[in-house]
Image: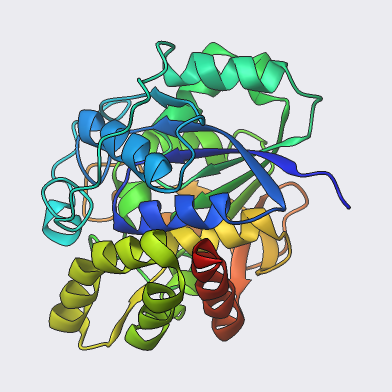
Length: 314
């Protein structure tokens, strides 16, 4: 049996973040060693509490949770995403409180400690929110950042425009300066953007499957997703939800799930209408660029997610 990949999830739960954490915990290919919370969908105190509660739901309160950046590197975040995720971030569902306390270390310290305790190139970091914590790690602990084996980021968009503005995807828009720092750092980044997440729709039928088969965890995940489903139906007229963060975790768990091409990527950090846009150069393949996800087998990815969440009922 292949050794399990040590995994860190950097997250701002968030409905789809919660689903992504549950997916990782149900996957024997990876060993979730640390969760670092960041500002984003809701404020930091709430994202940290939500991470603790999701881990507790899955019976994994042993996984440490460290609180990170409360806001972007430079400019304040104009708005959060409570209208999509609910005021507390989990679709109006109140999960039981965790018996675990927040790790006393700042997120960048906890992440640096973990990286320095592992062989270089062995740890995968999956940021599924704004990249503020990872940008701070690069600045404060560059020797630890250099040990990361792989960064799989849910964020950006190569060709489809944005979802929070006409130009920008939310996680890039929430801290463009951080995204620019990470994507231009030379770290081995895979960018899982809207080009592959928007076509990957978890339908109500799929949610019903893990609600019925996934025991208490599956039923709770289905309840958390309901506001997401309602929002998608009202906003886009679709009967299902785009599993943005879970798709990034699927690529982190099983590398090669997505078809990627190395591209040069620049993030717009101006204060105009294009702020947060990820400008992907499609003119050529880059020798040392970002691995940009460009193709996906959406049906297989959704089936993978449904099967893994259903396994909680086994």
